[in-house]
Image: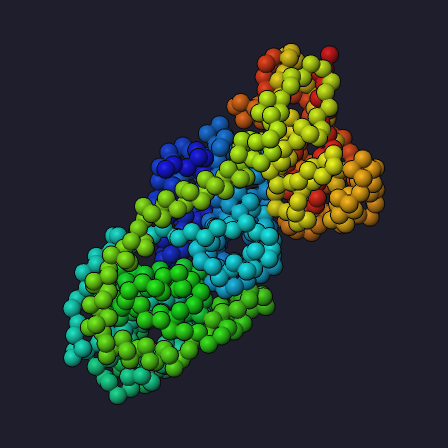
Length: 568
């Protein structure tokens, strides 16, 4: 099974020092590896936190060879950020690409709490759909009307050496954890409960690996507290240095069991690595961990409710919902059980190890991506799909009459991707939409060559006006409420107070899907709530045309009609 789109525009960065943070590299190698180099492009936003752009894909290739990106997907590999200006830049870039390339847009999001802060959520609303790796944001995203799909993050676990050293219960025993020293990671909490559980067992130790090349206020505070615990007991060992990939795997192989009890995760790679190395894992059974806590070798530690999410100092002052609180008593008990019943837990993991491999099978994960993205691409792409409910009952969607002279295309010569037909007009069916398209007269046949004038009649409606229209006579002139004050309210947009909702009026070749002419305008160009705009295009005899209206931003758009006329 292959993707139905033939090109990709990435927006994102690769950070090889950031563990699972190199999302773009993994997606490109393990999901989108079949795409030729000339049909993949990187459109990065400069950001101080990114060490280097991803080298396997050329930057801005879609601008150099736009013909190679006729049926493309725009995929934003997003990072957690608290930078408002970066978010505004990302929003503008997304809408620009949607407008210029007419491509469906997706954002790939790993988030560690159950809510996005407001401006970040507005950014996510700019995309056609959102891809997540776990279910912790489901309620929040659904409440915002965001189209979301859940897919496993691809990762090349198969490259790990799955031979673990034998261990028995009558020799020294070593737990371990590898994580950044953010308060959310609960490294100090783990160390405290470990010492309580094994204070009388000097042969049991806890090795804590963290990076020393990233310093911040949280790191300094957490490291100080861990150092105090280490100074109290030699059972605590701290390895504070970056490790190469082989050295990191070798360190993990020296462990008997792995522990990870963070308060919030969007994917969580290290416990999965431990399972692939046949190490039992003591795991906080919450957030993203619930996706794989059923696997053999996992000892689940329950939560005792939630707490306000404060992942780091930079996030203070932002409402990002809740993190999950660890049951400390259950954690102590799980550590003890892991030590005392280690041989049995290890044996079960060995016997059912194929379940770990099967769950993370890269071929199966890629197939899930192909199926899901093909479905969304069909939903949001600009081409006509005969599976559309209207297409099954209305022949004119497949074969429109020719254009002998002046011709007004209005209802019923509409199809719509995100709207609904009410009376004689097409309306968006969301009061706060991300992007969408109304299609008029698809496949209309040109009878003579020359210049064609295409006049779009566009009306703007507030939610209140739309509701009145739905319940009124479809032929009533009340469809357009000429409130000058409402124009100002329309000017609010997800891209910021200083930006405007955008419309693009386009004429396309029905067969080649090439744009023949367009007019892009923002709402502040409207002098009234209903207005006509002309697009003039050269056409050839027997050419088939589509007339499209794209909208972007927080406003309801009504397309009254399109008047098509040959110019002398």
